[in-house]
Image (cartoon, rainbow, N blue to C red; front, side):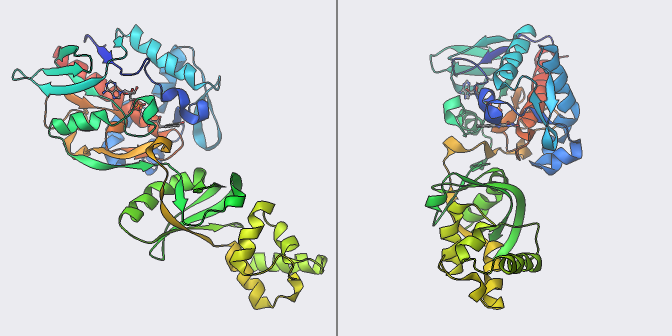
Length: 393
Ligand SMILES: Cc1cc2nc3c(=O)[nH]c(=O)nc-3n(C[C@H](O)[C@H](O)[C@H](O)COP(=O)(O)OP(=O)(O)OC[C@H]3O[C@@H](n4cnc5c(N)ncnc54)[C@H](O)[C@@H]3O)c2cc1C
């Protein structure tokens, strides 16, 4: 590729297994937003800016279009293949790589990587196959969803070569709570506000979908808060997620709404009143939090007690005890330290001819197509730079 003989070593039976399951099988390829909007969604954005500038959303869309995969833009600028099939994207990428001259060897798990005295890099895979190359790109992914092949090998290889690793941490992952709402398992709350608190101070908030599960909390709003929540939890802070079930209504407006409901139907009990505001499986828990029986006549409550109910509806607290395992994390935060990689070439600052790309680097982003784009952009830049280095171009 770009004049260089290229060999791609893939340990699984085929490349891009993870791409095939992205976006719930639809692959959210990238996002149509601007570069500065991308940066706002990305951790270590400054590092990845040169890569995004050289190969951005329109470039990956053009590359895929050239392979017969058209794209569509959906809500929030999310870009998907028009076919709705992630496999089409994975196959197109593989086809394109082969057309560019890449020789793909599957079932080849790189186990060792070292630099020879002449500066070349020597690779050995688990079946003792050896390859020597002028340039090597390590693009082994992070630690999340290990069944797809990403088991942190690149982090070990980088460490062997003297690179420092920012401690990997799962991100975009469900959070576990002390007292899950078992009866509400699988219940999805739409358009709620989830706010993250640490040691009783607000840290961040996300509006959107929250799913209550047997272990705790999931859903888009939670995934987007998970990175910060896990970080704070690891710092031994007391981490809570508060759910506001009615974010569009101020305390006063929600109070007035309850009063109006009671004026319209004075015989309502608490169960009947709350049922007007939330799905039935939530009721037992919310009633417990309000310290009220479902059969309590709602209009027997004082204004103060009704105001307390409103407080509960706007701040249901969940104490965060941890996170779901790597096998469920969408992305890995942490990785090869970006201080040791040149952002203009992706070359290692410690070894000439060694390059890094994708999730193995300490770059991660929010949901919305930003992680794949970061992998495409850093991959493009690393590949181009490695080819130039190898050919002396
Ligand atoms: C369920 C799920 C859904 C996702 N959905 C989206 C989405 O819709 N949009 C989005 O932007 N991001 C999404 N992501 C994140 C995105 O898939 C990753 O950020 C991206 O795939 C990272 O690309 P990568 O090439 O760095 O690593 P990977 O895709 O993990 O690829 C690494 C490759 O290296 C191979 N490998 C590893 N070690 C070795 C070794 N020692 N020798 C040889 N080969 C090796 C692996 O087998 C694998 O094929 C999702 C992730 C998951 C888990």
